[in-house]
Length: 267
Image (tube, rainbow, N blue to C red; front, side, top):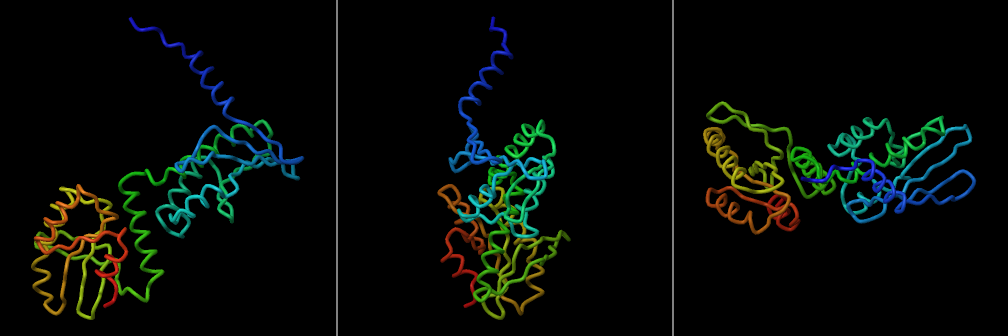
């Protein structure tokens, strides 16, 4: 027979551990640095600043470190209208927190008794925002598309492309294309984005290519090709890449910028 779980003992042990790994450091007469026992995905300790304001309110903030730390490593979080920024706003709304002009995550209260709660709210927001890279497949795909769009927009002299384009197949199903690149005047490079390449994706792509055969036959003036853009390729995905190439479907890794440019940049 298993022992009865002592919830009080577990709670006390957890609180003692949290207490031992946390510390509050006074910085001046109205500021305290709270070093939490938690770390972000990069192994950095999460710290918050508690400020007693002149108008008798209290503010808890990460001082903008969370977003700065992620963006300094090459991930854009703050582009207007991006999936990542929408996710950040959703997280902050849940905790009734705010994003400052310097992208600091903060919350203010007029009650000293509520400071402990807003510390918890800001800490929760910081951890969730730090973990955005581990979101759902749909979110990951949206972030990937943001990254591709940012790159080709920043290098717009090297790329000619359209977005918001769709084609209809023989089955009357409509297929949205993420990008249509034009290396030359008559080049039309249909491009679909996938975060990874696997059996399901390969079969779906081949189905789209076959279903749109009539559309391509009715537009003989354009040299239409079908391209699959993936975030990266590993050993497991090579077999699927080879299979697609045999069906005249090109596979490009966004991580390999030379390959990306050779396939999509203006010739």
